Amino acid sequence: MKHTFWATLLSMAALGAAPVAVDAADAADRTPYIGVNQPAPKDVDYPGTLAIHVDATDIAHRILTVNETIPVAGGEPVQLLYPTWIPGHHRPSGPIRQMAGLVIHGDDGQRLEWRRDPYNVYAFMVDVPAGVTALKVQFHFLAAQRSAEGPIRITPEMLDLSWEKISLYPAGYYARRIKTVPSVTLPAGWDYGSALEQASRDGDTVTFKPIDYLNLVDSPLYAGAHMRHLDLGVDGAPPVRLHVMGDTPRDIAVTDAQQAILKNLVTQMGKLYGAYHFDHYDFLLALSDKLTHKGLEHSRSSENATAADFFTDWKLARRNDLLSHEFNHSWNGKYRRGLRHATPDFNVPMGDGLMWVYEGQTQFYGNVVAVRAGLEDQATGFAKLADVAARYDRNRPGLASWRNVQDTTNDPTIAQRAPRPYRNYQGSEDYYAAGQLIWLAVDAKLRGLTKNQHNLDDFARAFFGVNPGAWDINTYVADDVYATLNQIAPYDWQAFLRSRLDGHLNLAE
Image 1 (cartoon, rainbow, N blue to C red):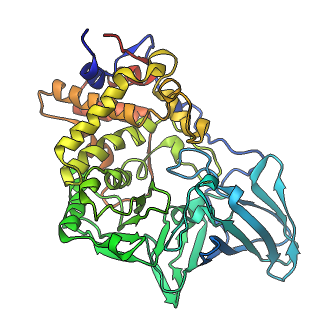
Image 2 (cartoon, one colour; image 1 turned 180 degrees about the vertical axis):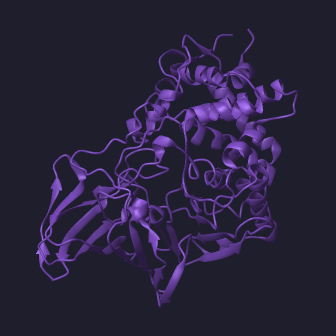
Image 3 (cartoon, rainbow, N blue to C red; image 1 turned 90 degrees about the horizontal axis):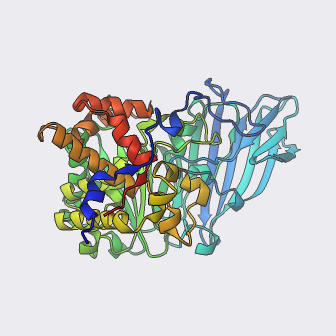
């Protein structure tokens, strides 16, 4: 009996589903959903600048102490929000369970009682007396001690500091219209890496240049006792740096040859897209067997945490596309962003319908560019793709019967990324790997339609390589994807893609 392995890989054919006109995230009503009792954000400047200071010196107890000064108008109630929907998490993930010790004073020294909204646990109401012009807010972030309590983000040697976990912000304003001045006190002798730009340093206290709250949250900080900073800049690109921290000094011993490959990653992304969407870029890389492993994209940086032997066992590292995947998101997911992902603040729910572009195509190019750059050899790259194809050839009965790829874009919210008892039947964020195969099919179709004159690289450059140097947010809807493909090779791309996204996989032999 003949298997349909490669047919499945190239076609991702669909049964029993008519194409729909628009992606689920592109509904006619594009007004963002606002949470219960939460004022709609206004696109106007917040009156005043938030000062946010984090004391990160209590590494032994893994406790971060936060002190904020928030300007307010006396005599008016204020709602403060703890960030809930964090870009790149694809779900409401704000770890408010780890927040404790919230105390608020007016700038006159009077303690002000807060009350939590009964329908929105991330919202805090404060009645501000007349004459009070600023709130003095203090709380603690209690980082996980064990993996059962959540991801490990603090160890005796290093710290992963994300600003959305250690700040409150005023409701009713676009996050990009709220100015902040962030600062941090690090453990004695520690160094740090971040896309934030330093304004001053006094001992172990670092103050950064003013930045809006949207881009503050988009600019995390890695700090550690063992850290190196390497230049990955290449001709024609803005400055690129690698900040690598490890459990031991040995872990961060990067050879010249390894550094050259990482520089080639920057070169290859530039060749692919023809533009860079940052004024500088900072790879944050944690090499640890203690810190929880992660990959999270940002416009001008990325958080990458992996095994301590990434450089010391380079053969293992050559099978790792973490850095290429997260770097690719600077173009796909951060600069070009699905309309429903571009919410005005961090408590307006996101719609994840276009994840087959955001993550699916990034999964495709994370693998491809890793090979082009030399992070993986070609045999490894093909083997990883074949493994994905094998999975969808025989091991996704749920997509062949009751679910479709489009519906799996809801999985981060449905499952909160918890393990599932029957993943192959239930499905679990298949927009990553199935999306990768769909874009492989698009590449094959483009090559066939144009007699190998065009391929997916042409789409990547046309769609993501616009406006060199811009690093704001450039939104799109599904119709924009179809239209760009049609400019490269005229075809019914909507039907081609929707059948694969909204139908069921044809696993028949």
